[in-house]
Image (tube, rainbow, N blue to C red; front, side):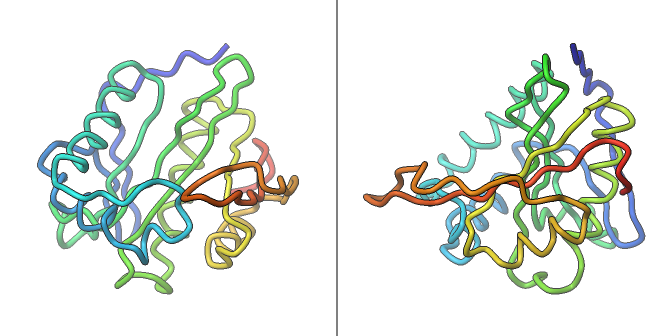
Length: 186
């Protein structure tokens, strides 16, 4: 069974990015993202209405990290390491199955620049090599073409489509499931 330890927190660095630990100081930028209908369009969660909503979400991230139940990185541009522009991380860990779900969001001003692809590479490497995950799952809205393209570019394979498996805002929504197995290239 997996027994991850996220202490000390693993900062990850790429050519353009610093992936760092989230703190309560990031609540303002979290609010900016999670209150933005464009960012949240394919994320079936209520929009953040107040800074307190964002702070509560940050606290969930901090609590999961402290309990070794999940890890979320702030995506920052290297030249602005304090400016949180997105998140990426593992949650819904199935320790007995060596599996976790990956999720991410990015500020719309950075869409289409390869930032999410650059961030997903070291996160997957960390998941497979350090956490010893066997598989990583990603759930997406079938209409979120950009996310699906990112997953496919990163080597994920479509596993299935769940029809109307999720009820949100008065409607039943579909979910497409992708996965990536350890050892099948990063």
